[in-house]
Image: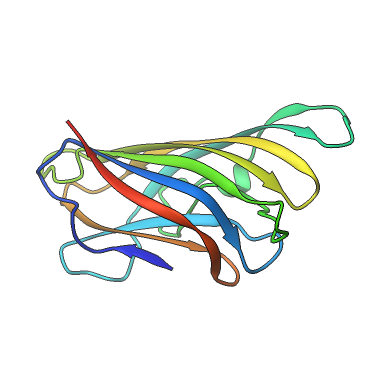
Length: 163
């Protein structure tokens, strides 16, 4: 896992995570995130989200766009998918961004969206979009990233505040 347990506060109204060349240990793993409040470390905040993908296979098979209901949440507390089926080959990785808006608010829910470009396990290039909200009016103070199977083998994750 990669955990950001500090640096998310009321200094900025938007926080941007830039994920570069993230690469799983396990073939076919999904890259995920979840948040928490205060000093809590359960990472089980309630999320409502949507997940869709545009894709094109290396063999030039029919490209497409699909809404993937199994990767979104309707008031769920699981880690949220940011991509799916990441390959573990040296030529397979994902890069993208996650934006969280006004995490320190004690009044409003916390909106987020992400966009990833991934070369996944079945020789397919994907453009992945996730958007939603964390259904809490308590300030968010922690963000954790992980793959649903195995470890993060390579890659960088940077945190930036946006004015």
